[in-house]
Length: 274
Image 1: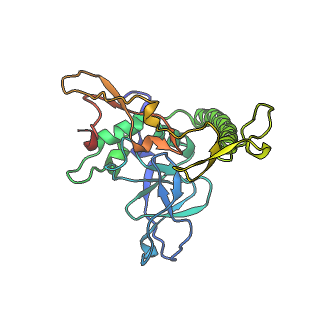
Image 2 (image 1 turned 180 degrees about the vertical axis):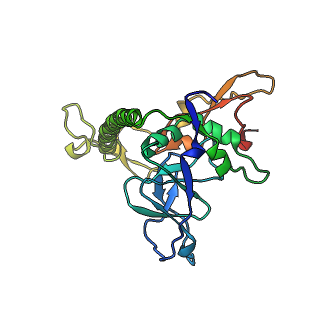
Image 3 (image 1 turned 120 degrees about the horizontal axis):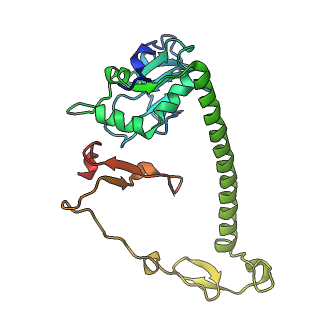
């Protein structure tokens, strides 16, 4: 172990408080994006008293790593005081927040290196599990509490800027979608005089395939006539040190958000890729 690194086990402890009051609000799941999400579990006939309680500044992670690609579902509860999680999840907390800040530890969990480590350390024949003992063996640098706070503050400054950019990009995308609808659905694109085509008596013709009027000289065609497929594939004789690959977890809101990275000989190859 590196001299400035310490094992996580000396700083954390499991928490197992059950929902004996039978609360039914704030039922949460844990995403591989390292955040809590509203649970989509079917709760008909569910005994809520078996659910675990997670409190503010406590962590929850999903030990079963078999079906989550190369990412680990783990999150820190920050914005509400209390939530409910499945009894299959592990809830834990920092023993002394004067030694280790929850926000600093959560930054460590967000690192791709932690995901790769946890997947590599997962074991089991039917389901691969990253158990509590392995979690306690995680090594990380633990500087002074003042330095931790400084790092967290810098991180929050950057993430807040990213959020502002994302909000700006969202508005741009909404504007682009509105323009697309206005031009290509409502057919109100600018005519030669810069006026809306359809409402300015632009000529429309009936299209049998769409069963609606479309602008004159427009036609319906297939995307395949304008693109070229890539049929390239990996061969068993190919030699690679790392592979970047895409699966459904990378695609959200019709966007490709990053790629998975696989280091040959170190990372486990997903079963679906064998």
